[in-house]
Length: 372
Image (cartoon, rainbow, N blue to C red; front, side, top):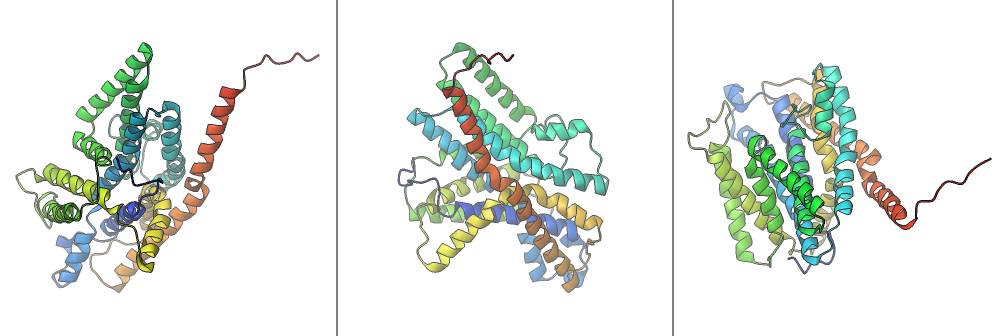
């Protein structure tokens, strides 16, 4: 385990999380506001534009990083507490539920408004199913980014159930926990991608037996670079690039995930030392603070912008780039304002609920006094 970290803040990981959410935003804004590279006029198919399109088609890779970071920070912490004998199911459930639901409820307000205004039709059952993270399992997604949230929630449920199974002494609880684990395995076998569960587990396992190793960091960066290039060239289908007959997508995903795990594991030992790196690390923390809200709300906001006049450009010029930058800025500002009202209160809500749980344990239930 990472014994040299005395606090729960790890260097650079906030920056990774913030940049990952920003990459998803820039990618979706580009795909929504520009035609594909292959449909551009010949004069716009320049090297600069090819680089721009290549850098803004990596949203899936950014989500992989989310999963690795989640496994490292959440899964790793659960394993640590299991080894220390301090895992508490109620505390874990409260922590994960508030963390997921508070920003999700705020996002649902934007999603409902956006879907209603833009004419996207979904049933009440669809919305309720998405609130319960059943999208992609029993109901469709009511907003694109919610596909990954289903994975995240079921990762948490599975981890909690396994930990409960290993720590409870009651036979009934063991049966319940085993049933939850079995249901999760069925879900990942038939509805969700099992390789993404493996990615999350890799992130959790990478939290252990780590020590600073410059050669390992260099090797992981090389693997990351090669995997990214392979995934871009042969792992995706578009009008510009045809997907290879060989299914390289899963191989590239797993290689990417492995390299990300090692990079995450290694960078936390590299403390920012000069003014620039300290500033960058702090800015990363500021961006990470509302990255979850940004991820959940950006696409419905972009749909609203398009509905109210933002065009899908067939050329690359100052006007189309202006619309693109404006969309990104508007999305970030809106997400930050929503964060101030909802996600920023996450710690406070957790403390209030924990306080109520503690008071119930301490204060015995008394019969109400009779009134006459």
